[in-house]
Length: 266
Picture 1 (tube, rainbow, N blue to C red):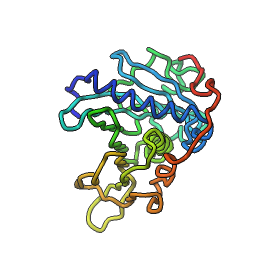
Picture 2 (spheres, rainbow, N blue to C red):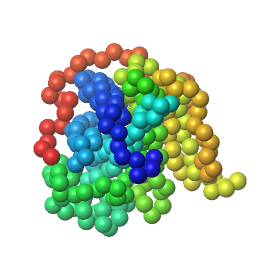
Picture 3 (cartoon, rainbow, N blue to C red):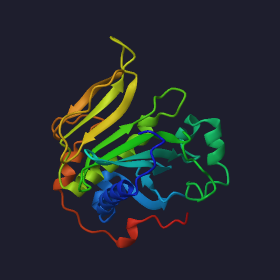
Picture 4 (cartoon, rainbow, N blue to C red):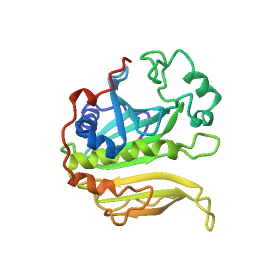
């Protein structure tokens, strides 16, 4: 989406409602949290009033941030929202060394509090690529139901291994959306970058998930090859998770309401 497009309030509200509903379903159950790997959550809003979330995943000592950076309405799409995905590493984890010198200095600065996340107003990430693990695009139909989620991860190399760091959060988010819809994806695929004919794919680049109400597959793009595709749990292979198709059929017990949110101050 063009950065000149001003966020549309209705589109942003629809995307926030859909994501909040899915995450609330997860954090209402300890069992659902264990299956999705999502451990804690704290909701945010930026200076423009656009929503965001801080999330923690099992097995990852750092914190993730989802920040809505653009939203627009369209007659045929319903609504589309773009979210920046960031990861703030723990200084104790090996992944800290993969970040740039600027990012490491910021992470160790007073701009971060004891929770490992930026203090409100102390660090303006905005349109920067600091700590970035890519962009998520969520598309919704005319009644606000998500029908497509795409994650575009930046190329690895001098940058952090964005795919490996971001997949736990994106995996859990897809599972949360499937849980909220009560069914698995219509189809899902992962695409790798291709350096040319006959060259081995250097790494995963995009995860595309067609949710309930979706049909077809993403349009092929130059430089991308579909190397993992599934329409049910039996076809799923990493990085596609068969739990995405199973979780909508599961029944969970409600958890202690106090476990639904991260109680840290931000």
